[in-house]
Amino acid sequence: MRPGLALALVSASVACLLGAAPGAEPPLPERLANTGGGTQLIVAQAPRTDSTSGTVSWWDLRDGRWVRAGSAPARFGANGLVEGTSRKQGTNTTPTGLYDIPFGFGIEAPPSGTTVEYRPVLESSWWCEDTASRAYNRWVDPLPSDCRGAESEHLVSYRPQYSYGLAIGFNYQRPVRGRGAGIFLHVNGRGATAGCVSVPYSDMRRIVQWAEPSKEPHIAVGTAGGATAVTRY
Image (cartoon, rainbow, N blue to C red; front, side, top):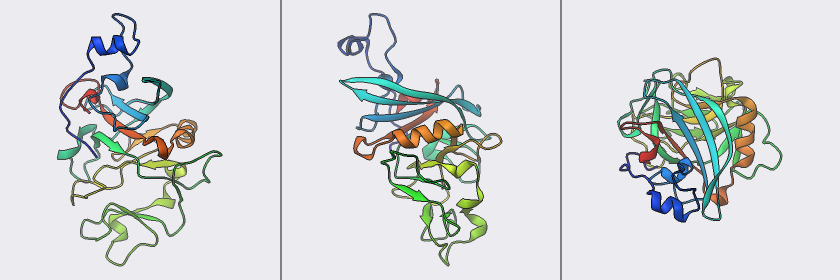
């Protein structure tokens, strides 16, 4: 997880060296300060911090250039987006920043060709969001005794949202209690999310198939401008 990195854009001269036409805006990943060091990147971008919709695009680095593999309309938190380092749990906001993708999961079987670690959602599968639990912000199967079900997500109960999903590494490696738990890229529900990023079913299925652990996929979440601009990350 690398939220809050300083603003930096790829210069025009570097863009030309990478083969961009003079005066042409380079692909979005080339304008990010950091893409995570891998060769796959998902970009989730909203127009403003109060937006509940935007776009998700996914990219491959090929021969030194980022090439878009796909894009889809996206939904964000019901209360918009907020910088990941200052987010609070239960605010229905999507955290901005650059994060890794720990694993995939789903109620449905993994699509053919899936290489990302894919955890099947069972009746016993939960995501612990109880701040008092030792399993805070972790997949648990079954629910441990110190994690209250009322403070957690029973994953199988979220259909179609968790038909397919990718865990986003927000507050994951060293969880800060109360910052937030259970932030995913998943299938659309009825409207805005509780803090996740969502896309249509067919696009989420494609993203799960596309993600390859050996290419170290990351996701950059942000806005088109301002303090939470995606180009900060």
